[in-house]
Length: 287
Image 1: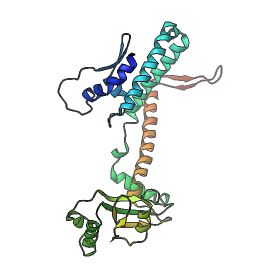
Image 2: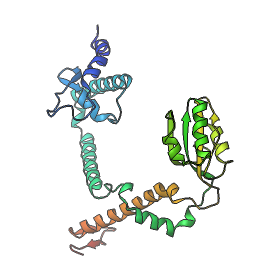
Image 3: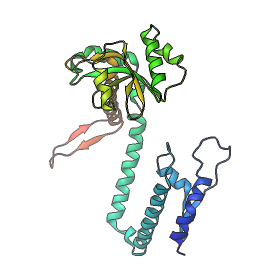
Image 4: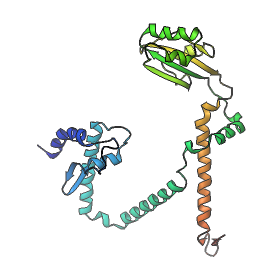
């Protein structure tokens, strides 16, 4: 049996036993766990984990693909070394440039890109919205709604009737005898994002602060509660465009941080740019 076939038979068990994606499994640093080897070079599960998205467990197919790609690349790399291709001036230049860019990127991550949209104060976001309200005119209808999905029609009807009889949406939901399969609270939807399609038809025909009849679908019975219906051509709610505003402000602040960083760095160096044989532009130190 070849090494690769043997690896394919045993890698699943190795992954199940060793991958350990959860944090806090122990105070000691986990041992490096090999999953493939070629000559004296070893691929470990820790190497794979560092490359893949650790927010979710990789599938066995993903792991197999990673291992096979690593084996192919290692074969080609070792052959290139044997031929001395790593010693060429072109390779040396490319490696140096790649390293230079990685170091620059590390600096920019610290000084510019560390600011995230969620870091911007809410007051600043609201001020931007109030000052640029005309820029946020809706090109399509939007509804702000909550909904629940029940498997049983009677339970859905019970919940709906409780709201009709005067209980608040959230109180009725809390007192429902059987919890819903799905619960979505106060989310903005357009026709393209509210699925199944029949939900949009109902959402745009009932009044604001009104609960719908149970809507029969293949998934079960939906009950909608429309908080607000905003038609195209009207100004969008702040909540609907808040993510967009935060994105705009982040771009602006990052650009300012970038410009400020360059200005500060220029003040620490003497820079000359030769545009012709005799002409130059000089940025004196401390200017």
